Image (cartoon, rainbow, N blue to C red; front, top):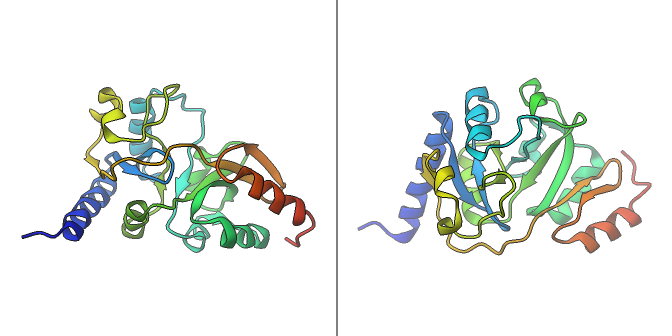
Length: 205
C-alpha cells in the first residue's frame, strides 16, 4: 500500500516529468497556486501565455529551490544574497538580471523576478526540476486561487498535472529590487522588508 508520503512523491515526480515534456502544471505556494512551465522552453512559455490569456509583453517570475541555484541563471549580488538569507524561502519576489540569455525574453527593464517559495511541495518539485515559472494559476485579471477547486476550468484544460496542496494561505509576494533598494509591490512582510532596506541602504555590492 502506498503511504501518503509516497503518493505525494508520485505527484511531484509526475509534475517534473510534465514540465520536462513541455507541459504546464499547477502547484501550491505559500500564497496562492502557481502555474508552472519550463522557462527555457519557448513553446511551453507560449502555451502558458495562451492558457492565462496573458499579454506576451508581461514578464514572468521564476521559482528556484534556493538562492544558490538561482545564481546559475541570474546575477545575484552580495546584497541580494544577504537579504535572501534572511527572507527566503518566503513570499518575496526579488528582481535580478538574468545571465542565461534564454531568460532575457522574460525580463522587464532587464530584470526577472525570482522566488523561493516557502511551501514543502513546491520546494520538493523544484529540487526535481528548476527553474519553473511562478505566475499565478489564473486567467489574467482574475483573482489567484487558494484551492484547486477555485482554479478556472478553462485554465485547467491546458494543464498536464496538478500538485494538490489543499488550501493555501493566500496573499501576494512583495516584489523588491534589492540592488536599487526599491519595493515595486507591497505584499507579505512589507514592513520588515522596508525596514531591512532602510537599514542596509549602503550595503556593499
